Image 1 (cartoon, one colour):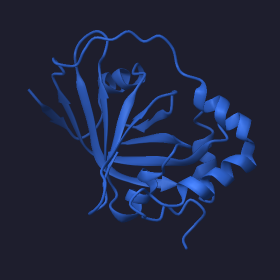
Image 2 (image 1 turned 180 degrees about the vertical axis):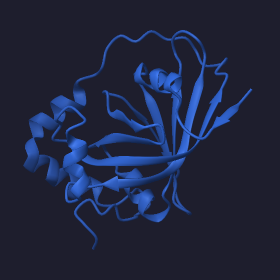
Image 3 (image 1 turned 180 degrees about the horizontal axis):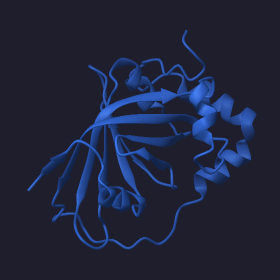
Length: 182
C-alpha cells in the first residue's frame, strides 16, 4: 500500500544513505521522457525537504534541458537488499551550473570530479513509499570507476570540448544552457 508524506523522515533519510543506485526522471511538455540511473555517492540530503545530486558528464544532458522547460522531477530509490521498499521523491528542481553562486557551496558536499556538469537541487513537495515486493534481491559488488577514469583522462579542457559537442542540447534539440543562456 502506498503512503504519502510531506518530507523525508529520519528513517527514510537513513534508507537513502544506504542505497547504491537511484533513478531520476524529467520531461519537457513535448519530446522524450528522461529516466536515468545514478550512483557513485552522488546524492546529498540537505534537509528533509531538499536533496542535491551531482550531475556528472554523460552522453546527454537531458535533465538540465528539461528543467529549463518544466522543472518537475521525480527521484526513485528501490531496496535491492533486505526489507522491500520503493521510495519516490516528487518535487521541483533547479540545475546549478559552475557559473552559479551555489555551485561552489555544493561542490564541497561531494568528492571532487572534473566531470561535474551541474548540481541538481530538488525541492521535495511529496514523498511516497510503496511495497517493492516485486523488486528483485540483488547483491552489490562494487562501484564502477569507468566514468572517473574517462573524465580524468580527458582533463578539464577535454571535458569542456565534450560538453560543447554532446551536452549543449538534449536529444530533442532543447538548449541545456551548459555554457549559459544563448
